[in-house]
Image (cartoon, rainbow, N blue to C red):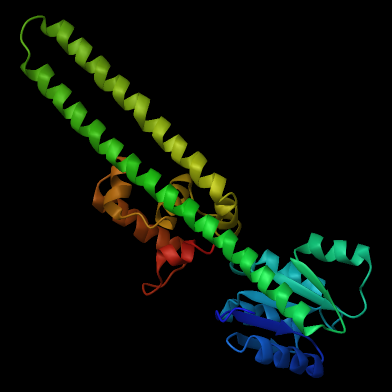
Length: 281
């Protein structure tokens, strides 16, 4: 039994008869799937960006641009780089061909003439693998958000502790110079021990999940500063202005100004969601 869960599939083949055949297979075995199709491989990237399919099936041998070149373009585009791609061919059958397809980014390889059961099974396998990968990333993002929240609470605790130490320093009597020296030492120790260490741990955790986040951003927006990139990481996790301000020891207004400047650098319209935009990198 095949799944009744709906998924979006983009089919790319220069022969209309092949498109019709694959559509008929899906209509028979997976009628719940939403299908997009094109016989022009040059237009496939644009269609993929607009529709964001769960899987792309492409023929190998096509005029103008073959399947391997299409895979390269899809992988080079940040927004489509994680879409699984299944390559179909009636000519390139050797183990070297299979190696080439997988090296370039295809997740699987199906030979023509098509066996309908095999095609659907491989399609479902590729989609399930992609879904599991996305779930792992989502789980990691939730973990990162929890770490960021802990960082916020930690900063709030440190601020409150520092406040109380200062209060004691101002009200204790006796060896005033000695008390003041000890209190200042405690304040400096607490701040220095927690500030940089906590933020560094967050950075390590974040970039272990989103390894190429900064690289992808800088490749497209070379004018971003280190502070911009730091802000982007927090916004990528959906953190509030208040929480970001707490972590960075800034006021809410200061963070709002930084967000506004960042939107301008990224060329975003007011209607565009900043977090959703950053999630594509």
